[in-house]
Amino acid sequence: MTLERIRHSILAQKAGYWNNVPHAKYGRGYDIFAYLAYQAPGYIIQFHHIIKNLDRTGLLTDDVKVLDLGSGPGVVPLALIWFMKERKKGTLTIDALEQSEEFIEAFKYLVPRFASDSPVTVHQIQQADIRTWNIQKPSSYSMITCQNVLAELSGQSRSEKIEILMKYSSLLSDDGLFILVEPAELRHSTELRVLQRELEKAGLYVYGPCTYLHSGTCNPSECWSFAELPRMQPTKLMSMISDVQNGYRFMNTDIKFTYSILTKKLRKPVVPDAFIRGTIPLSNLDEYIGNMVTIVGAKMSMDIGNQEFAVYLICDGSGGARVYLIIPRSLHNEDIKSFRNADYGDIVKISNVRVRWNQKKGDINLIAGSRTHVSAMHK
Image (cartoon, rainbow, N blue to C red; front, side, top):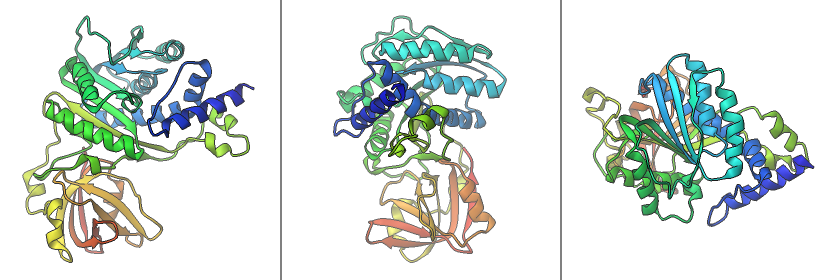
């Protein structure tokens, strides 16, 4: 009976998510069980991935103080504690805001227990609506996080969301990071890119995954770009609730997400001039149809191709038509391997690719061949 009630709650949450006006309700215990069973495992893994990559770049300080907005049952704190246990250096202090009493109860049970044998201090979670919470004692945070929250603020206009986010950005330290994460679904993914652009206009800077390598005007409303991780193994609970007819509806092992990392001061990756010199802006590729070119851009998707061709979205921030790198599956040279191994958001320089116009899609394709050369810069 318990498993069946969790299933009903999962279906209700999915229906709200796919509604024309997306909404979520976490008012009952079974709503929370459904969230923990179906959504939380992937959300924990994706945020752990983001933080681990930031640490690899040297962007994280040893001692991290975090404010998590709309914490739910503590998904972001659990990912951070997991990371700190692996890191084995520094300290972590967590403050969190959440309005649902049921989520707060889950947070109080899960997060302090997981943090008990780690260098992590978990302050008491505050019950508050992030839209109306008044900052009483300004603190300085090295990280502010907001994962899978903005899409659920369906009653807020874009300008209201910007106002909310800028209010919290005032709490960031000068070298702090503001991390926004949203679902990979088209509506929410493109909306985050639009919000990112508006936050830039309001005074913040984008660290990643977007990189502006050539001047131009990007169109964020057309930018559907998301990270993708290998499928996770289902948890025991997920396997149990999926052990019914049409159980696939309760199996959620794909991990796809859109994120934006913003800063108060410009902290973009250093790209040597020599790396960019002589490359063609992607917005100008329509002038080179049929020619071999050299370009530089960020790898903005994992492989979205078919059995014959690997396909990757490339962007340099200059705007224009969408640009895809097309790699025949038969190519296995070291340069192609280095591109395939590059992470989402890594900057790549690609030489000797032929420019083709995709009439059907209205996109530009860069066709790789045996003479194509790739250099990758890891963020």
